Each structure stands twice: as C-alpha cells, then as structure tokens.
Image 1: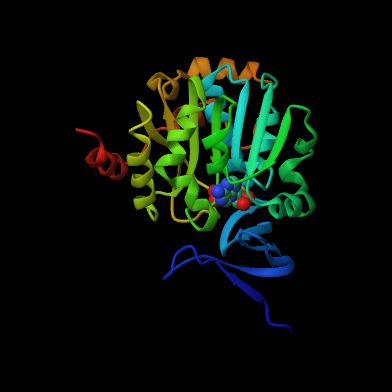
Image 2: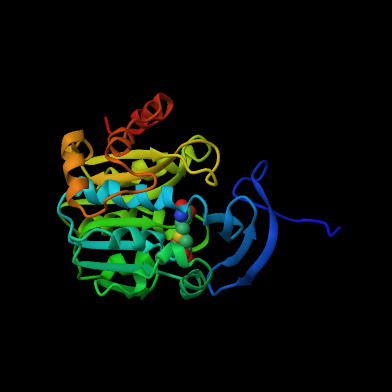
Length: 290
Ligand code: SAM
C-alpha cells in the first residue's frame, strides 16, 4: 500500500493544517513564488503559494462571493473595478456577474498563476477572462496603483498574505495610492487574514489605512481552509454609511443586480458581516486616532 503523500501548510510555524494528496498536478517556482497545485479527497484541487493555501475548489465560493458582492452592492452603482492579485480568477468571475459593471482591470504579478489556474481551476474563472469588459495587466499591484491614470469605484485587493510579493500590498504607500485612484463614493477592500491568528496584520492594516480614509473597518466571513476562525476583509471608504446599507435596500439591490442567487452571499449575510467580535473591536479602538 503506497504511503499517502502529506502536504503541510507553513503559514504558522508551530501549528497548522495538512492535506493528504491524491495527486500533485503541478509544482514549480515561478519568477515570483513557489507554486503547487494538488488534488485532494476533501477539498478537490488546492493551490498553494509559498506553502500557504490560496484557494480550493470546494470552499472558494465563500471567499470570492463575500469579497466581491459586499463592496459592489454596498456601492450601489459601481462601473469601474480594479482587482489586485486575483490570479485564480474567482474574484473576476463574481465581478463579471454584475450587469452594471462597465470596465474591469485585474493587475496580477504572476502570469504563471493565471495560466495554471486557467488550466487547473476552470470553475474558478468560468470563462470570465473572455468578458469584453475585462483587461489583464501583469504587474506589481503596488506599481500599477502608483502610476495609473485610471479611476475606480471599487478596488479589491485579493492578494496573498504579506509574504513575498504580497508584502507590497500591505504598505501605507499602497493604501495611499489606492485612495488617490478611487472615485467619489468609492470603496477599497482587501483580504486581511484570520483575525484570531493574524491580529497584528489586521491592526497594521487598520493603522495604515486610517491616514487616507475617513471610514476604516472590517467585515468577516468564515472559510474552512483559511482555518482558525473568522477571516476579515479590510474596508475603507469616505462615506461610513456605505457599510450600514439597510437590509431592505440590500435586498432590492441584490434583486436588481442580476446575481439571482449565490451559494454563500445573501443580503442578510452581507448586513451581519460587519459585526465584529468584541476582542477585535477593543484591539482596534486602542489604535484609533485620539
Ligand atoms: N484567496 C487568497 C487569499 O486570501 O490569500 C488569494 C488568492 S490569489 C491567488 C493571490 C494572488 O496575489 C496571487 O495570484 C499572487 O500572485 C498575487 N500577488 C501577490 N503579490 C502581488 C503583487 N504585489 N501584485 C499583484 N499580484 C500579487
């Protein structure tokens, strides 16, 4: 009986999750990061970058729906979307479902991630790369936001954790540039990890966003393979009411959006996603400007 191959995640040095591998589909170093794609019994295909799980076939819908539909339906009239990172194509798929969007630019640093996810994760992109509204740019997201002349209604930073090239997307200069290229009424969101285990990263983001945005907070969801409790998304805007849209308004916007139905997102999940645990509220309050 051949010994099952085990893949251990290395996000945390002294504990973590593992997967028993059915088959390694691809493994190599790209120009930017160590990349592996493997098949598993429990979660289908899994992609990891620099030994950290990025996405799985089984639970990707939770992350991609919540990272996309909460800011887009809160905005209410988004036309131009910027996706930073997003190389697996899941955010792009969900953005394309909004009939009102006119233009989508995705800035991904690693062409190999795009190519390999197009090949091994066809359900993630579901053909969205062929959407006529879409443009792919291969660049460091931090470089793009510094020099672009484009302006956006929603910016979604779907990056890795602050490891390797992802580090650039958690710096003050990146947030300052994102603020510059947002239209009035715009919203910035970013993946910010599992707050119980990565609280320092959450607080760092909070402190680095505050100088540039008048309303900074987080919203949350739970994704099984981002283990350790709720995952939080950073939220930054000028208008604090954008994260307080009433349930009736969310329901009518959802009905008008063309989304029909999702597998995780619904207006009530949206409405309640801004509820944060008291320990996080208190940790952030300590860092809030006096
Ligand atoms: N859902 C995942 C998570 O929450 O960690 C993110 C998945 S997505 C695959 C992360 C993407 O960010 C990768 O494709 C990676 O190549 C890209 N990325 C990392 N650093 C980047 C940078 N500086 N500019 C643009 N893309 C970057």
